[in-house]
Amino acid sequence: MKVGLVGLGVIGSRVGEKLADSGSLTLVYNRTQARAAAFGKARGVGVSQSAQELVRESDVVFTVLSDDEAVSSFFGGISGVPVDGKTFLDMSTIGPSTSVAIASDIKRRAASMLDVPVVGSANMVEKKEAVLMVGGGDADFERMKPLLSQIANVVLHIGPNGAGLSLKLVHNLVLASYVVSLGEAVNFGLNGGLDPKMIEYLLVSLSSIRSPNSALKVPKILGSDYAMQFSLKHMIKDLNIIEAEARKQRSVIPMGSLALQLYRLAEKRGLAEKDFSSVAELFRESAGQSQH
Ligand SMILES: NC(=O)c1ccc[n+]([C@@H]2O[C@H](COP(=O)([O-])OP(=O)(O)OC[C@H]3O[C@@H](n4cnc5c(N)ncnc54)[C@H](OP(=O)(O)O)[C@@H]3O)[C@@H](O)[C@H]2O)c1
Image (cartoon, rainbow, N blue to C red):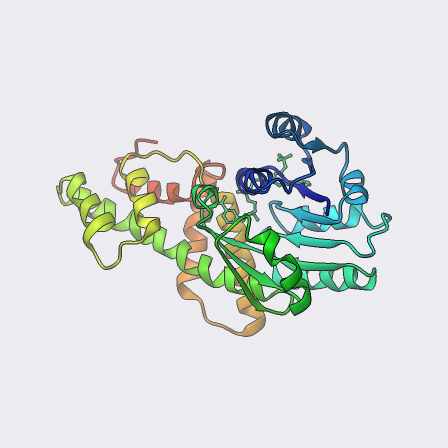
């Protein structure tokens, strides 16, 4: 079985590493070709010159791309390539309705597609600690589970196409406002004259609200270290998807809507390419303490 991977960004490159470590990866392609060339050389896997070429030569195709537009443009670009019998595994976080529409088109072309969004950061993917939540048919899931298990220890079948993405959005709805709250609370503590080490100790190690994300983000917020793990622009993209889905479902999401406004404000301050925890700088700036 020949396996191709399209998209070698923060997550795609880690997914590629896992597949290459297991000896399963045959080909890679990336829009910025230098990234694919460097990856191919480092890992001894083939480099395709185009997405079309990769699809033609692969039985299974992973896509790990930014957003709806990138994924739609990839599938639009391969509309002339015969795909019968092939399987597409899309790990991008995109709108469930976009994914369902692509999956049904792929099915009409005698191929199959699963949505496989990732819960977890780049370093969790490196340690196989991310969670893969799969939407799609039972038989396709069972067929692909051994391959997906090379990437993560936990691979869950959530339901039909789009269901993996819907659950991923539940996660990011919490994550978005959780990290805003961490920024707000850290600033509140600092302005109250507290020792930053004690704030960190409480939020990372002792409190019942601690989590892998407080461990990851509180030191970044305290140190104004916004080296990108998950970009602020991608968090805005996910909150926009959540808002659109909520409108369709008539769900009320006041925390998500407020968080979206705050991330948009941070984007206007030039933080789009920084880690999304840089939203905390809004509170620092309001107190005249920004180190950014
Ligand atoms: N980072 C995380 O912690 C994390 C965690 C869970 C899920 N996710 C999700 O996983 C996906 C990828 O995230 P990431 O952090 O890896 O993003 P990233 O580092 O920005 O990488 C994005 C990838 O998509 C490609 N791309 C973007 N627009 C494209 C277009 N129009 N046509 C073709 N290729 C295009 C980029 O190619 P170039 O190299 O040419 O720019 C790159 O390979 C996103 O949907 C994100 O929400 C991320």
